[in-house]
Amino acid sequence: MTPPASQSKSRKRAPRNRTLTLSRADRTRLLPKLQTELPKRKRKKPVTGVALGDYKDWVAFLPPASVDLLILDPPYNLTKSFGTLRFKARAEQEYTDWLDNVIQTNLPVLKPTASIYLCGDWKTSLSIVEVAQKYFHIRNRITWEREKGRGAKSNWKNAHEDIWFCTMGKQYTFHVDQVKHRRPVIAPYRHEDGSPKDWDENQNGNFRDTHPANFWNDLSIPFWSMPENTDHPTQKPEKLLAKLILASSNEGDLVLDPFGGSGTTAVVAQKLNRKYLSIDLNKQYCLWTLKRLEQAKVDPSIQGYADGVFWQRNSGK
Image (cartoon, rainbow, N blue to C red):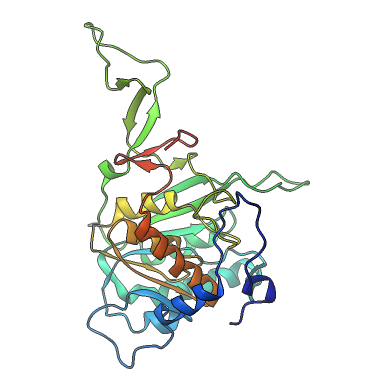
């Protein structure tokens, strides 16, 4: 669990680089806040916060049917290093079986009304569908543009990822009015009296608030000048998690992330007044999460989300 030398010290950054780092004082302050010891018995109330360890161990101590929203963002079927840990690509069926076990482990703690979001790329989506349809109602597939990286030289650049929206049953939470998109109006229609027809006109331009679609091209992958950025290799934007959490949970609900990574789910859940349990095997990632949670208390804003709507990328919001 000890981070390598490249992680244990703050890297020298360019003056405008806002990537999160941990000082020695940060570690001393944050370590007591990290949950490292499993409960001695199953609790009536869910464990919440940031937990270090294997999700299988922690989930076993959650009360049955206690989770309102499951964000499942496991390693994709790629060989990739996560700090001191390494996930190795495997045969498709072997990965499918592994994912099946992940879902079975989390299944008992989900409420009958719970929603589930399963993250993957185009290849792992084959496994996701095979497993998800065994346990859930598959509602939709969200495709989001992940415009980052140089791409392959002998194939099409993989510039998107998928999120599969599932529910435990026919009754579930979905707040469509809380995840509307504010888009610029290119060809505005007007009533006979000249007033805007289904759009708003102001000094900042012409806009229409639209219902959310299942294709998202308004996200910016965290990078060095964004305060939410960390050195996690597969960090997702806070804006993305805000859409999932606002749509599929209520204030006070419990959000579970068994592969917490650098803590984006936990941070956004806190900003949106939800309870959360973020679990990860990497101590460095857990400490990043705790520092981000501290910062979120000072600045609860979410890039790209303001005035109760999601704004287009590069809109200034």
